[in-house]
Image 1 (cartoon, rainbow, N blue to C red):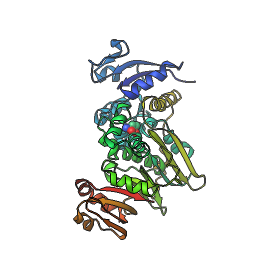
Image 2 (cartoon, helix red, strand yellow):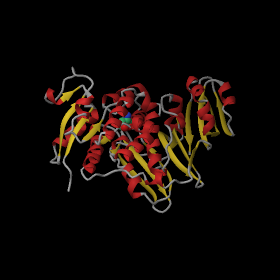
Image 3 (cartoon, protein in one colour):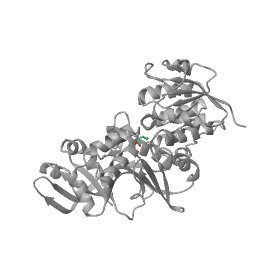
Image 4 (tube, rainbow, N blue to C red):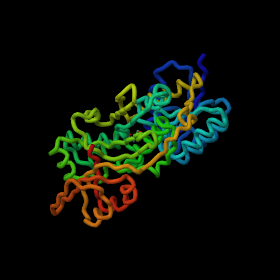
Length: 393
Ligand code: HSE
């Protein structure tokens, strides 16, 4: 029997509105009783008495048994979600930053209070990757999980590569379409993809890894020379988060732009679409494709979690409980193209092997092998130099 859900919804932005549009069209055994919003002056499409600016109006309402958290302030979201879990309310959230930053505490709260927190909408919008990692791949050995996890960056790269639109115009479009975060640095700097990767790693490998321990290099330093370099070699550039198990002992996690050829399954993933490639020991390669951003696609994932709560679904975090010997490590070499300005930077970076160098007045690059730890150590210097780094497969 499904349980009747009485919902309190925090946030009525792109995803909140998207979710509401979907719920309206359905006959589900649920009702949204109250909406908590930040800005009471904004024009709303629903009667004003449904809205409140006081979180406790919802959190202290005994009739509300389920919280849907869709705000973009990660710390405020954590306070709301932890209070809800402690007071016996189940929660659905799409807040990747909040979940990635507090995952272990949130899992502990669920165990302690017997409540459930679901967050399919936090990772790759409409693609059901978390529940698949949790249930379907429960007993599979996963060699790697990688893909395109950020719709805004992918939208920008698609516009640049396919339509010759410049970076700033493409970013504005991604913002206008509601794909980008309020602070778009989170998207183009690879932070959003990193939060999602940390969550994926947890469900794939049973590891809690703090986002600050994971390298993220974004697309924000891309310039015309990089695009020309890629085009001349028939590459596209995609922003790729990777989680990879090495030798049954360590898991490598990083987010970096990557040159992809037409042979890659990710080559044709364009605009706000995301793709997740799972490389498993027995199932071999599997690919999930779908819209990664936008109100309705993300709203559909949120609704699926809400619907699952009617049957008391919860993540069991079995891979954490199984306590594998896996550890997170950044000791891993990758081959990169580095376009740089300041010669001194290259000396610092400790390239292990250099296969190509090019110097012109405005365009210098080096191709070689480098350890992820070096890239982490010198990330600020790379940023200050406006360097752009791309992995070469
Ligand atoms: N800003 C995010 C993206 C929204 O572009 O993918 C979906 O998480």
